[in-house]
Image: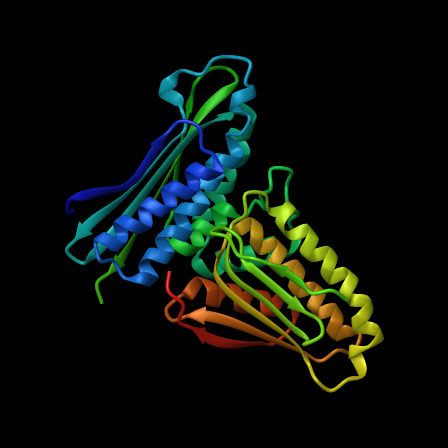
Length: 179
Length: 135
């Protein structure tokens, strides 16, 4: 395992503007490391999907009536690892979610991880044709998209904050071989 | 019918729909802050245009040319891209000649795969083109 370079990170509320800034910084840093364009695009696309998810699914936090320990604030880190065979990318994103969302989300992630690339494509094809855009502006396709594009499993943990909230952390790791 | 032109931003694509020239182009990135707010007017325009398609273009020789030149679209936008393609399919159903060009930057397997997937769903053959735009 080689040295890790943080490409971008943020803690706090995720707005559209912050998402834009994180994507810009990530692209700039990858360019500075002379990473090829197709790889930069791929990383940007996966990272965009992950941080847009935080933006959409943590938008209730400003209206939350209780208090949330600052340790459970929304966070995201993307880092690059120089490997002997190429480069590795690790993305970690965390945000509080409502306790009743834990079961369905965990089930969805487990289901995605069980599927082969070919089956993921089939599921995606059906889902894109059948899903409706939610009130939050999502199509519920984000996690499927991330798994398909990264060709890797999604690692999720859920830590209880209190009776109402759980702290959801998603990690995705993928690599690009040197040609 | 009036043209529809929406200038690109960093997170939304150019929309250049020119019914007089039968040329319809979408180009750039699509990850709008509010996906419905961006795409609903486009869907409404296409719905309105469908009345012209059935009345005039169905019998003419020249095709309606649709060019999709995406650098990237997020998962929420993908639903709307598919809706646009379904609308185009409806034009074909009433007799219009349709050509769909789907541009792919060299090595961009995700845009290529998305095009293939959508082409199958709407049962419209796409003409895949190489696009060399920089990031």
